[in-house]
Image: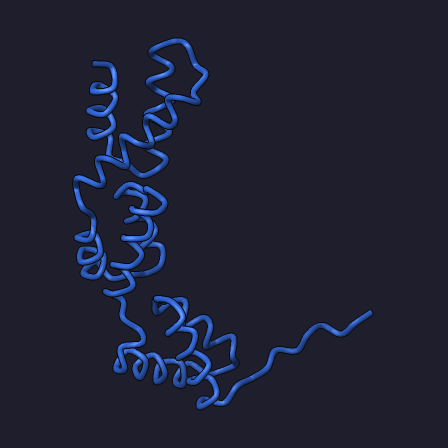
Length: 160
């Protein structure tokens, strides 16, 4: 049997170098960075000091993170506003940063994403009963985070 791997404890200086590289690699939020720093064996005061320093050096920026998150989720994963909002709230992002991030959504692209997902799902949906079929398509789009009124409009447009 092998010994469980011991966690290395870093000095504040070592942790700062390591976490700066972590933040430079991709956008991070305060929550991710905070838990990573605690995993390095730092105490709460050191963690707070490093987070303040990273924010001051613009390596850590919640607003920039929120914008990046929104762009990625709506353009690559084609998520709807509700799912994106939930994701940001779950990460403890401030309401201000969430509002700024949500401005990244282009309404035209958003509508195209909704239509694309609807058409894609409609091609694979095996349900023949028109009412049940419509309901299943609506549930699918809701699970992707789209608003009910937009879903209903898209379903009506699909029928015509």
